[in-house]
Image (tube, rainbow over the protein chains, first blue to last red):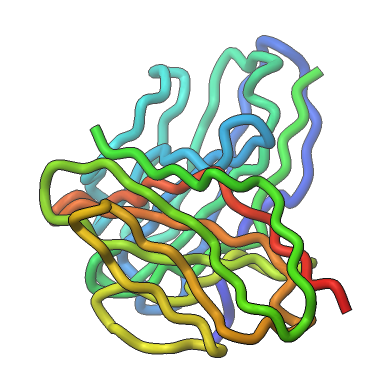
Amino acid sequence: KAGVTQTPRYLIKTRGQQVTLSCSPISGHRSVSWYQQTPGQGLQFLFEYFSETQRNKGNFPGRFSGRQFSNSRSEMNVSTLELGDSALYLCASTTRGINTGELFFGEGSRLTVL
Amino acid sequence: AQRVTQPEKLLSVFKGAPVELKCNYSYSGSPELFWYVQYSRQRLQLLLRHISRESIKGFTADLNKGETSFHLKKPFAQEEDSAMYYCALNSLGNEKLTFGTGTRLTIIP
């Protein structure tokens, strides 16, 4: 089985721009979560989707949004980028949910905001 | 609010010596605890979860609700154990993981 795939792997943006990151989960996985990883804050939960519905959301401003498609692929969008948004964005998928299965992580999309 | 604390950012242990990575949590309900590991140039992956009560790669972790701890232990460290270790908590019915800030374990040959 192919693992969780995230694109793009690296990207550079400037302040004020917006960015869209994509995540393809493992085949058969319906739950997709997003995390932001920074050296100072570690891994912080952004949101989780299951069957196209957002089930949970972390404490991030409204500039951070996401969605899930019928094939379970997910995208997250960050608008009006700020320097502090520079981070590694990790996507993870699982069959039904965190309690019932382990999370399988992608390699991440490294965003640099200049 | 749920919170996970890993007090050691860095931990160095000699090969063959015992390893203990500390994890404390705060959550008023019934938690689910996990340890995730990231080896050099690899993806973050699940090492073990408390509900399974299993030993993976010689590592064990016991949930101590009285002390709100979930320390990771291994009796004899091996060089391949060098990695970044994250403790994580999920509350029942809440589909999100709260991670600690991680401990970088280095095994000294």
